[in-house]
Length: 290
Image (tube, rainbow, N blue to C red; front, side):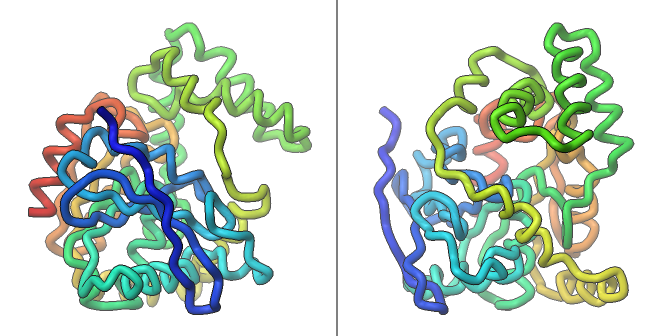
């Protein structure tokens, strides 16, 4: 029987009451959701990882049980690294085992640099980048084009083009986004669509831009990269070979940035590895956590 979620609160360094869920049993594994700004419940039990670890599923600012801050700058990925430190203190942990998905890999890497020694083990799952959203657009386009013989493909491409053109009403944007979700998956199944129709408490529309505004200016990029590389973390970096959202390039950059890291690419999987290849995913993560 699947483990149930339990709701919890902690206090940020600005006094905000922030939320997280717990699910599973065993030592705690802190889990940061992507999006950015997605309701953390989409991570579920991470393919059965909750049978081995207590998953601490963190509500980012302005999502789930965490309120919208009066100061939007608290939603940058760099600022949210400080929320993670407040959570560590709340849980009474000397160091964290930390897993981050997609955009949240930016927060996780920033936390490692801002608070050296506070990460015991780090897992980066289909990262969006190292200091910004950094897919190789040519690689992503090739991954998507390789799906051209699948029946959903023409509608997905048309929806993608309409969204890219801009000036789309919110309701229409939601409809179009649903048509593009097969690109998230290495192998598309119609039952996956139900995952996107579950009630969620996602972040406001402005959140995405604010989150990524934590990225450095071009002149400061080299210094930021050097700071991250000096953090001392040696992450497990996981990527999907058919990830039509991020591709594999950001994962490869993250692995190259952190000396001693370990990169694993699941050739037939997409952006949500734990759903498509749960056993292999859980095995890799547990082996890394030790």
